[in-house]
Length: 76
Image 1 (cartoon, one colour):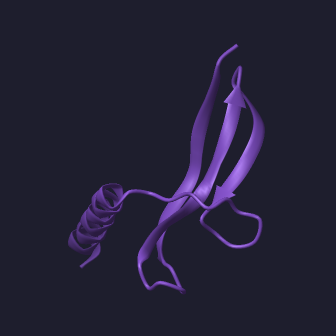
Image 2 (image 1 turned 30 degrees about the horizontal axis):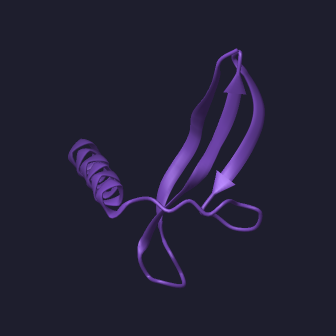
């Protein structure tokens, strides 16, 4: 029996309390190619708090900046 995780979506948001960046999203727990549970993280009501390292946040922010730059090149 194989169990894994699948990230459904994620985004970077500014934490209203601290003013710092945070990763917000949802993941599924998958067993034998079927979703058996879903959990939101770092979001609003009912989500689980998941602390991400500052190194990962910097990498994700860099990716976001690269995506925006690419969009500006395509449509600017």
